Length: 512
Image (cartoon, rainbow, N blue to C red; front, side, top):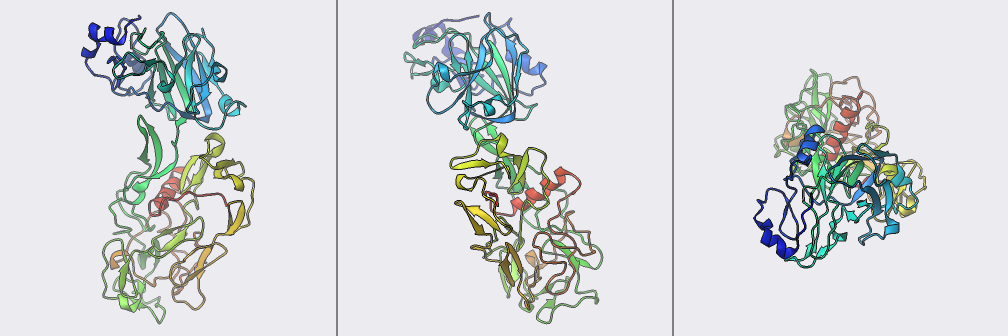
């Protein structure tokens, strides 16, 4: 069904009186989409496909630029018009594409159900490497980016006609419904009925510009780790991990209450210290170094800190309370966690096609365009500075501006440690040692342990620092601090990595 109107005629026909149920309004005041029964409407399509989509309130004109991924597909899912137009893609450069810059995906007159699949966009020599848009072709060209559509100059205020609505799928990740009206438009005419069911395509394997990147939700603890998700107005940071019911001795805030390891349990004779279960100095079998004192809760601490109780989130150093990471700048690419430098990607095993970035598994750059000034390094799967593509640096160094730089450059290690070969290691003769208890636990009380190593009391190496299996004051490590929660699964690794990210400043991890 078609409805012809101009900006003035729209008022005369009463379009401005249409209830504003939808979230999108045409320049002539028409609220879209709306029902034009007896056609099959979008709400019927979404219901049939198991989508939890409000066909009016969830209607948007954005995102209208997409980054193609390796799993790209385009499926023709609905046609409620006499014509069957086709679908094309274009490089969205900010200017309307010419006819020769529209590259076919689904041919005009294809039957509903036609599917185009493959990695054709990314492999097409016409692909410029950035974001793309989609266009209805075969009659009048209509774009997902309405800025390229015909402007209604007779409308008040003037604006481009909206010929495509975008819906994010609730059932399929990285997927969108692109719903077109296919009738002609002019500076004064809108030859469409506004239900946006003329030609509907289901696009998968795409994300909006800036989607799928590590981000900080602003919440404490493991709840801070997130990935950017596409919304109608851009991107939002979606939490990756819900709060855990209890704390465990891993040096992270598992229950997202702003306190680290509080109430975490360790085996009998052990206490939680800097995220690891270590032998208590109260049991008689272990004695602190001469320059340290044994606290009432079994930690070896600076004698000046014996009677000091620090606020939650702080530790005592030489009798003064401070943040555990204050003054520490970790070697590349490590971050500070409870006073220790750790690699947030240590122990993280990502699925095929993904790489670890800031402790979070994201789509590798082979399937996601890089940002400005960056290129894809196929060896690592990371987006790196263009001058670093193909540059291989030795262990303990990383590439910056095309040159290999020592990981220790600019590093300020925790007290009693120095940076060597990209690791913070204990200074010989220092009581601080590799991971010492030279200051007490956060809040001046013992903190507890996480399933990332709290129960392994047989020693082992500290893979996050490479410093051997004992503290500088002689206590055995309670387990590998880098081990992920549930090592046997990728999900557990992601949780541990996200927790490390939550306690670190969000920082882009580059290839070494």
